[in-house]
Image (cartoon, rainbow, N blue to C red):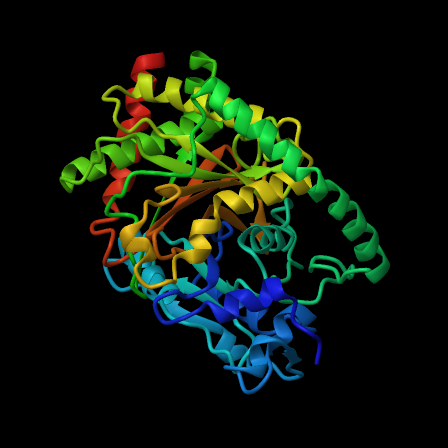
Length: 460
């Protein structure tokens, strides 16, 4: 039985009924032209009979799952394909609304630790003829960015290709799953990381001096809102796509980045939503935004929306300016806040950025302590993450990908998560929330559109 790294074990240890620790995704596919009802069965067969299963998707916690299973992996030689790959249908009238209700229900249920911790649902019955696929995998096995990239590698840019394999299949080339660590490489990188961390103290002093001098850097202390209390186990999920050209147009006219415009959309949506709930704080709300270390010039993963690579391993806190009435003013303040946060990290190494980001997010680790969330201010109000996806049309055995919506994790003190993915001239937003703490979550979609329309009028 292989030893489980502490970073994997952590997600098993903190999981509870109120805190499911899996990430998911909802994909929509348009069947090939001329295909009939049998295409769903063909897709299901491809999912259930992929040949050899990747070792990653054979792993499960060792027994007993509540103790030894938190430290060791066990490999299952036999996979129950009908358990892991399920065939479902949306209730009539088969709208996206019914699909999102199903996704919400599935995402709120825990994965079985006595089996490899992943599921896939092939879903038919949508009135528009599209096919949906909802997948989820435990965070101890794979993080959200890696899961998305693994899924992308199963697709083809050739609409006539009929040899695509699902993510859990053993790749024909031997790639496509996370590689093991080279012990010597780990030692070498560890020595280098120790040297970089030794420089963190003087770097922190320099950052502190800059914060005091400039006086306008957004710090990890946000006002309390209804989005920052304890969470229950049930989830709500909402999703929608926006054309990249619309967001790029605002960014170009306002001399900002696409990521700034996305944050301005989120700011306007949160402002209108909380005004409806009578719960908008007087102080400006803030967002935690993951940072790609390969594209550090940009405030969110994926740079300026061009689909660049890089894992989001750092984080910045951005002022959302929700106290401002006009969208144009909010966008200006958001762009300035992002630039100031990037300036602080400009001279740090990737390892130092990771350590500095961990300090900013330390309150999240303390959230399980009884009373901590209730009596302290949150470090930020919402997580907004942007993950680069495919630049052009992609297909699974002829079915065109028509939606790629991340379904993420919420935590005590962070009842709302907004993650988006770029896809073939679109940005696909996936909004995950605690069902109890974020009522009528789907209204955020309406407010996101209203916020973008306001920005277009201001910068048209």
